[in-house]
Length: 87
Image 1: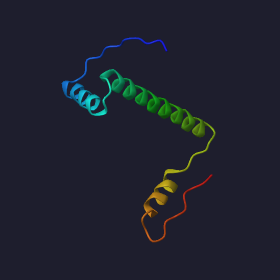
Image 2: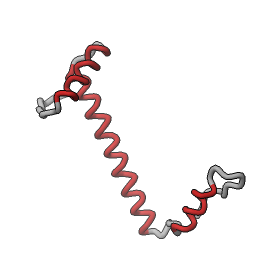
Image 3: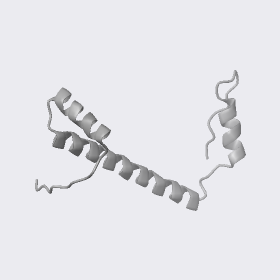
Image 4: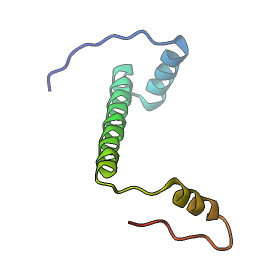
């Protein structure tokens, strides 16, 4: 796999945590940073996908009134919880 060097200025405390993890895991700093960046990007891509899915639901009218959701949420933890709303 082709690679490319990237640089970033990070707070000293964060750099020290990376160093500690690298030592504890017997990995390089580069490996720690690459893993962290890959995981963060995957999380951001999933959030974006879910947002697009939510917007599509709104456009299609697959929504609940706030009052319905609030009543359901308020019932959780009571002796008679309501079933989750369904379309």
